Structure formats: structure tokens, C-alpha cells
Image 1 (cartoon, protein in one colour):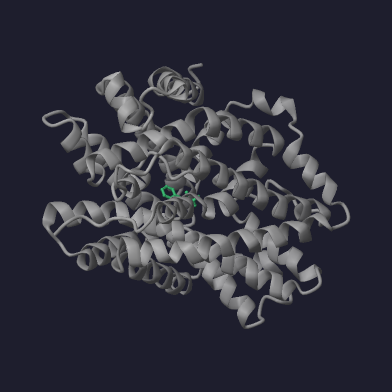
Image 2: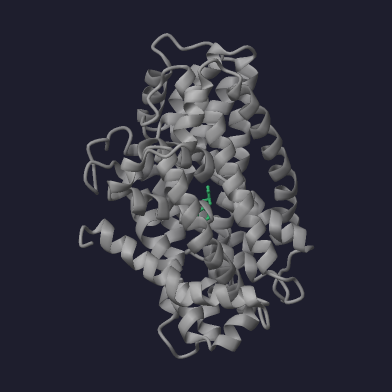
Length: 445
Ligand code: PHE
């Protein structure tokens, strides 16, 4: 059977944007930015996106397109007889880890959507939204129902295939999400006191740069948000043929992803400040503070409904790209059908999701890393360690294993001046920056 392909280049772009734009832009961006001082974090994050992440995105997609294979197969094909394929295993492993916690947060999102649909969250539950969130997430099996629902939806789309499932779903999801968020941003900006939130997000407090944690946090966010370093973009690139030019497409994806992060910042922070909520409330920020805000605004019940609908869509268009990584890999090595491969991998991720979910209930005392619960620990390892390491190895692969001609050819940069800049970034700037940030996070620098 011949490998599947995207229907059009636009289809690829929408799918890649769908992968990039997700809980990372809304849920994760807002609490990481809130925890790390807002403006200073945003500045650093954007710097890393431009300097490291977008050039790496081009690199990652180009590996997949050139090899026309999954994340492990690509390395095996392009560098036969070398240990480079181990870097592909890392990617498959990261996919399990990431979807293992992603599906839990996505499950909460569906639950919230449901509660707006039934009207339960339109008015504050007696004990408050914070308590309602705590009670729900600490329940042993209730959240799991929603996690299972989310994984089922993800699997259904992936089973439907690259063109009919992934591509068509994204064609509807992405424009819809953009419209919803832009309307919400205007809403949020109209609150009295909104300007303080705008200032928090856009005017950097320079002293925040002396906090060592901010660099690794911004790097991890750039990788997570652009779906970089674990092979999701590589796998999507492998369904592209050579007649589509890559550089413009990857810049577009990077711009779009940052646009969505900034827009959701504009939705969340003005409202957070207008209603006197602590921006550093951590991972529950979206789930506790937003309903509080929605309750106080006119038509809040509808705004909440639409918001959580958008959040679920954004999560789905990303989760399918994560599930696709091991699905494509197992399909090739075991000759499994798409259906069998995605159901089995999805089921394993759901089991991980059970562990993560119980980390809010009976296993609340389990803190694998520092004071972080299971979800935060998995997120930390995946986003701040595994993804940047994966990206580092991709940069080294194309920058040092390929010849310069091969690297420029793989990225459609032959004879281009911008191509030379990209090459210097991939060969020197990105690897060195990632290493420096790692050393800094380890306290060595
Ligand atoms: N980029 C996605 C988001 O922002 C998450 C993701 C990470 C997807 C890694 C694929 C790979 O939600």
C-alpha cells in the first residue's frame, strides 16, 4: 500500500497549525506566562520562537518530507547503520508522555463544556468554582469518563486517515477557533481595569530576567506550543510531496501559533486583572478563574460555552498529531492497520491518563519532581527536557550529519540567502542556545 498524502498544501498547513495551536496556547501559555511575570516571559518566548523554534520547525518538517517515513523510520532511512534512529524512539516515548497528561486536561475541558451546556456552570456552584474544580478533579472515576471520551474522539479522527480525518477536521476547527478567540479578546478588553492586564502581558518587568527558571520555561513553552522535537511535525511532513515549498509554510505556522498565544493572553489577562485574580494561580488558571469571570459578564453562560468548545477543538487538533506519531510508527514496523495501531496506542495513553488523573485524587501526595504532582512532573520532563533534546538532535542531524548542500536542498533553500542564515542557526545558534539554557537550568551557568 502506498503511503498516505495530504490533499493540498493548505491542508497540510492547517493540520500543522492545528497541531501547534492547542491547550499549549491557551491553558499552558496563560499559566506559564502568569507564573513567570507576564511581559518578560512573552518577550523571551517570542525571541525563542523566532530564533530557535521556527528554524527548527522547518528542519523537522524537512526531515519527514525527505524520508517519507515516521519518526524512527526517517532517521533509519536517511542515516542507515547509525544510532540516529534512537532519537526517533525518544520522540515516540515523548508522544506517550505528552498525550498521557494532555488527554486529562482536555477531558476537563469537555467536562466544562458540558457543564455550560447544561447550564450548571452558568451560575457559581455553591462552594465556588475553585472548589468545584477541586472536587471534580479529585474524584476517582468521574474525570476518567471525560478523558475516555476525548481519547475516543482523537482515535476516531486518526482512524479516518490523513486526508479524510485529520485534514478535514482541521479545515473546520482552525478558522472557527480563530473567530471565537478574537471575539472573546474584544470582550475581555472592554472590562473596566483591563489595561492592567494588557500591561502585565506586554510591558516586561526587567527584573524577571534574573530568575533562572524563566529561560527554560520560555524554551519549553516554545517547543511545546510549536509541537516541536518529538516528531509530530516530522510525521506530518512525511505526508507532503516535494513540490510544496517549505520555508514560507513553516514561518506561517510559527506566526499563526504565536498569534493564538497572544490572542489567548489578551482574552485571559485583562479579565484576570479586571476581576482581581492572581495571574500566578498555576495550571488551574483557565479552569477556575475564567468561569468566575464568565459568571460576572453579560451572556457569560454562552461565552463560557463557546470558550470551552473552542478549547476542546484546539485540544483535538493537537492530540491527533500526537497520536499519529506512534500510530504511524507501529503501522510500519508491525504492519498493523491504521485502526488497530491507533486504538492500541490510544488505549495505552488512556491508561497513562488514569495515573495522571488519580494524581489529583488518591495520589495527590505523589510528587515525582520537587513539589510537582504527576501531571506537572510529566509536563516538566516532556516540555522542558525531552522536546528541547529532540529538537537539539534534529538540529545536529541536519546541521552536521547532512552536508550543507543536502540541508539546503531538503528545505528548498538551495541558492537562497535566507537559507544561509537558517543554516547558521541550525548548525550553531540553536544547538548552542539550547545547551546554554540547559546549563542555566541545571544551575551550572
Ligand atoms: N502544540 C500543542 C499545543 O500547543 C501540543 C503538542 C505538543 C502537540 C507536542 C504535538 C506535539 O497544545
